[in-house]
Image (cartoon, rainbow, N blue to C red; front, side):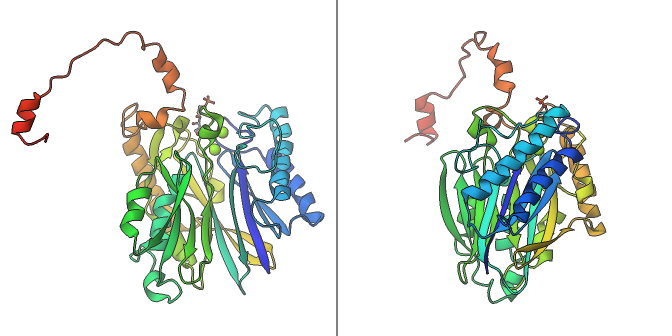
Length: 381
Ligand code: F6R
Ligand code: MG
Ligand code: MG
C-alpha cells in the first residue's frame, strides 16, 4: 500500500514563556485531528510536543502537498490557538502567520515534512523533533547517518546501502536546490552543508533504487515573516532498517552533541541535547536546544507508537556532555561564538537596537600597505 507520512508542526503558544506546551492546547489539537481519523480523511494520527512546539504526525493516502491534509492541520492549530488565547499563553497563535489558510500550509508559518512510499512488510520510521534551533541542525546527523561509514556500518556491509545516498540540499537564501550523490560527491556535500547558516538538507534518497529515506522541514519563519518570529524548530522523518540505516545507526549521531544555532532569542549557538519526551522542556537560558526521537512501526498506515527513542541511559553521557558544552558557551555571555554572527541576527530585534547609533559613526581610515608595496610582496598582480 502506498501511504503518505506527513508531519506538520507549529508553535501556537508557550507555557510558561517559550518553554513548553499546555496540556489543554495539546488536547484541543488532538481532539480536532482525531475527528479527521474518525471520518476517514486520515488513516491515523499522533501528536508530539517538543518545547513550545506541537507536531501532528499523520498517515493518509492523499500524497504530499495535499490541500485536505494541510488544511486540517491548519484548522487543528487554529482550534488549539483558541484555547491558548483563552489561557493567555505566551505567543498564542504565533506561527499562524497568515490570516487564513490558502491552498498549501507552506509559507504560512508551520513547518512541514512529508514523504510518500510503498509500505514495506515492516516499516520502522523515526520522527525527530527539535526546539530552539533551525532546520540546518539536521545537516550533521544526516551526513553521519547516510554518508559516514565510521558511523553507519550499513554503508559498508548492506548491499542496498553500499551504493550510497543522494542528498537534496536547499539554499535557504536563494531558494534553490541541488542533488548531490555520495560517496562520489562527498566533499561537495560537506562544502555546502557545513555552511549551516545557508544550506539545509531537505531530503535523502537511496541510490540503489531511488527510494526516499529521509525528509526534513526547511521552512524559515523569519524569511516568511520578514522579521524575527522565533526559530523554525524543525522536524525530520527517517526510515529505518532493511536497506536503510538501522534504528541504532540513525540514533548514533545524537550520542555526540554538536553546536547549533538557536537557543535564547534564536540568537545563540549551543549544544543540541537529545532528551526523552518528558525532558523536552527547555528552561535554562530558554534552552539549551533539544531534540526528541519518536519511533513508530507503520502497519497498514496505522502508527504503532510512539516509542521514546532517547529514553535510554545510553544517552545520559550525551546529555552530560551537552550540559558541559552549554556551560562553555554560556561563559561567553554576549560575545561570539556564543552569540550568532551579525548576518544571522539580521531578522532579530538587534538591528533596532543598533539603529540609534547610525548617525554617530565617523570615518576611520584603516592603514594599508601601498599598492607598490603589495606588488613587491606579490599580493597584487
Ligand atoms: C527562542 C525563543 C525565546 C525567545 C525569548 C524572548 O526561539 O523563542 O528564547 O526569543 O524568550 O522572547 P520575547 O521576545 O517574546 O520576550
Ligand atoms: Mg515560542
Ligand atoms: Mg519552539
